[in-house]
Each structure stands twice: as structure tokens, then as C-alpha cells.
Image: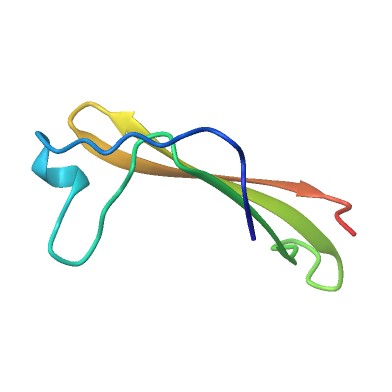
Length: 68
């Protein structure tokens, strides 16, 4: 897993971004290579990014096939 380079933002005034168990830094992005969901024998590069969705965090995951 690696980071995408952006510096994430801690959102202290919105309690949905910070709990006793988790911190969801807005703008955090990471990538990792895992088995493809549609063709498990193939590898896929997945990118996860935490964004704002109103006053709540949203984790977006996208995949791109052909990772090596």
C-alpha cells in the first residue's frame, strides 16, 4: 500500500470525521494491489480516497486492472 501524495485534512469540528476508534482525514488517499473482483486470477490497482459528503466522510474506492 502507498499514499497518493496529498496531505490529508483533520476535520476537528465535525464529529463524524473523528470517533474514539477512528480518524477519517479528508483528502487521505492510498493505493494497493489486490485480486480483481471480476477476475480473481488477475491483479488490480485499487485507490481509496476519503472525501467530504456533506458533513460526513465518504470512502471512495476505484479499481484499475492490469496491475503488476
